[in-house]
Length: 128
Image 1 (cartoon, rainbow, N blue to C red):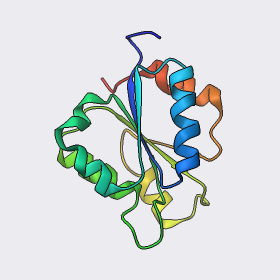
Image 2: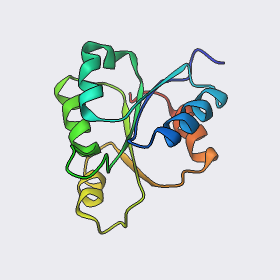
Image 3: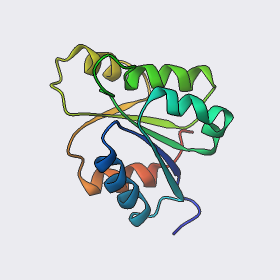
Image 4: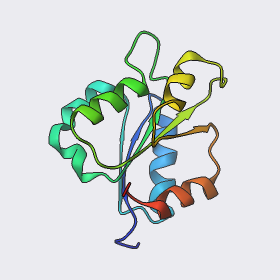
């Protein structure tokens, strides 16, 4: 693994997808990968969020629960300096997807994400 590739924070409420993405990011050369399932779990990291260079956030984190956009705003409040990417299985006209897509400096990928897209994200590293 290259030390120049980023440490990844992956947030999705699907534990199976978290396990797959954890392995995929590490196989593609991420320095490390931490998977979490909710805003609450991200908040429990506190200042540890600054150890990550890339945050990949599912937009829908479960019915009635804070979504990935809310995770983004929490990270922003913590002065997170890494790149943020959203994932979604919803249509592009879903209000949450529209909100995520409007956030400057972020990207939105539809699920399933191709391994070549993950590789490019890692190669781009942290936001400069």
